[in-house]
Amino acid sequence: MFVFNFDASRALTTIFKVRINGQVSPDGLTVKGTTELVIMDPTGKVLNTVPGGTYTGVRLSPEIPADFYDFQKVQ
Picture 1: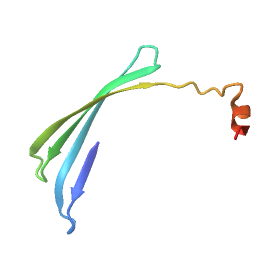
Picture 2: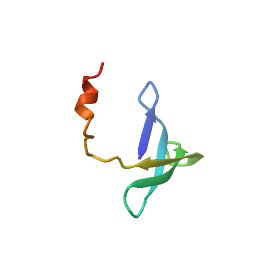
Picture 3: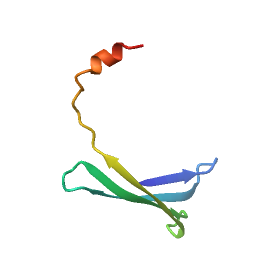
Picture 4: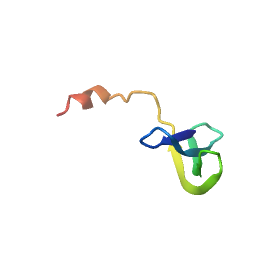
């Protein structure tokens, strides 16, 4: 993903390139990955690379629990 940054006079100042890597588990229920940010000047010269964090995710079931509607009535 690219993010283009402009100053008040609408001149391009920097470009952020966000790298996102993810690996889905064989069963398709979880994902793990990393992110990284590359900061470039308007000519494309790399100014800085910022290592990002890691992330994990779990695929939730699309099914509605049996007590879902009763739970919504409780106030």
